[in-house]
Length: 595
Image (tube, rainbow, N blue to C red):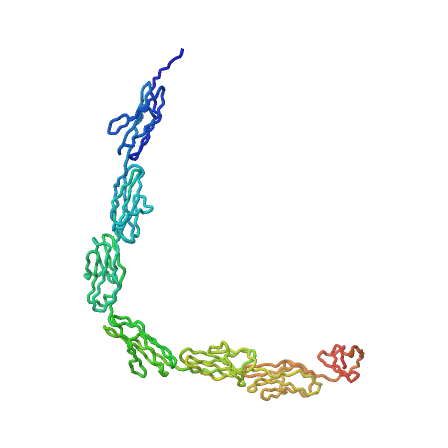
């Protein structure tokens, strides 16, 4: 027999329904789950306005809200029942919402082109609230979205012209547009201009602001306030200077003030002047005779400037031009001398004279220092000097020629007051030409004489007891002295000198007179020495020589051997058969070709 158990427990809610925000015109689904025995039955109720009403008896765990619901808060709950009873879920709220509202609109702002202002717009509502800022010209142009402007605030920096701004606040339902706000840039739209006026005249400066209401104007002159001379109407202020004086000259600035903000105009200059002022004095200079130069005078002044020129030569000023030009070109017929020039500049207020300047008309240069004769050796350096004096661009050119009067030739790269001669091998003459733009003048010529030995003594071989002479000749014949040395020691009383020649004579030459001789030529502090030459003195010696003659290809040879050892410096001559003479050396072995 089967036992039947009776259900005595109602269902248990395991998942409570959850509501949320729902854009108007859409729906959402709430879900309720329960556990229990028997047949579970679900039903749904809604509360709007204070009372619960059934909205579904479809016996489902979920309920989808109606898309026709109006904006508001709706409570939903479910009831689950079985044979043992029923249970209610918690109530949940479904908020049906529309587009957002704007609680804070952006407001008008005043700024400058160097400032930053921040606009604020606050929206309220359900769903995902989004912001988009837009801008337009203040003249009512089209509105354009501003990129990357998606927050409650938008910052405007360094605005150059006034604009209006607004924001659009939106969610899933739609958007709403805020009031527009104008950001006005306070700036100078018309700056005062530079003015030049004559002393005693009236001058006006004008300043215009971008804002016409709630603004005040003020002026400064050279940093100090100007009072009682300006009038303002709307957005324009005018500063008027009556009977302008030199003290009124200088810089002026207009300042526009609105609340705590202010902007300044460009700094402008008022120039008040009387008679002309010379700004560029005439400058003369050196002018080659037969040419001209131009002197220039410049002045600043009011009105029509009139120029005239005067010249002073000999003590009095005379007019030379009234052509009303800033420049004057001198006459090419002027003779050599100094001429003074000045200009006079005038206008309606008066006249002024320039400084006097000198124009020096010059000829060719003169030579104040001529090059002088010089004595040198072929291993020394001498410097020639030539100095010129004169106007213009002084130039130098050195020339050279042989001392025999050959043609003069320019020396390359010799264009200074001095010219240096190094290691000269033969005497020459030099001169320089000094010139300028007019012409040139030639200096005296200077001879550079090279002190050297022109004839050197020669090697000599003489027999003992003979007379031998050595001769030495110098390139210089006057003002020179000669001296001789033998083996480094002075030789005295054996030489005679005539002009540029010295002769050393050795009478009855002895073996002790043999050796080296040097001739020295002295002129002032300079001296040169001849080549070293050798005098050989030999006697007569007889020796028995064994020799042999071989005939080979027609040549005769002999060998000899001497019985004594001779000095290496001794020269011996022997007589061989067939009347042949042969020199033999101290080694005792000789070779002789007797043909």
